[in-house]
Image 1: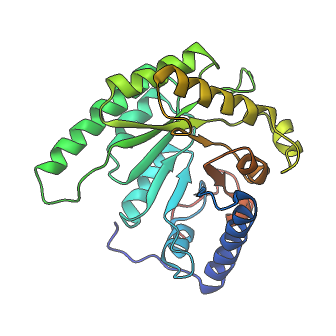
Image 2 (image 1 turned 45 degrees about the vertical axis):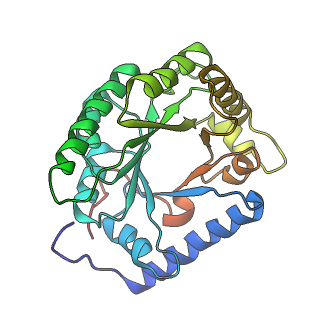
Length: 267
């Protein structure tokens, strides 16, 4: 964490807390007592906003998601180790080493190839080994969501449903001791997302649920042991109704984003 304290605007902090609590209330209303992780997507938003939500006694939020590897690295250096980071953007091979070295990276939610899994596993293992020889906090295994391209769109990353998804999940479980297969993730078609309501099932969510069930069956895992990471600002309530255990909400909490060129890590 940086030694230079970040400034927090009280008015901005109050608005952020209110907006996050509003999302939490909406989650509770549809979750029916089931735990659902809320990842506050803070991409292109300053570290000051994240710290405001993390320190606010009303929420003390810990799970934050970033889409850009370099931005996540910069914020992780500035902010407390108690934050649990999620990388949710398109995962490139060059991202794997620096991401796996972030000690409080909780999850990579966009894994789509064995090569990337092997790199994450190797580098995370090195970090775990080095931490065990020092007085620093122990490093946990890196949680993984395998991304599934449920909509079949060429522009979307992710494994194809079926054998490709099963094979990657199996490799993580059997060949990557420093990774933990947390579940499956999808970013579905925008049109389907906008049409989703708690009463109207999203086709992408149906596919992801089917893939989760298939992976559990093929790998001999207990039913429901793998979580579904699906649902964003437009459709998270419908996703929860369909079994999502993690939702990723950004603009509803932080407000609309400007351009990447205008974004500042610290304000």
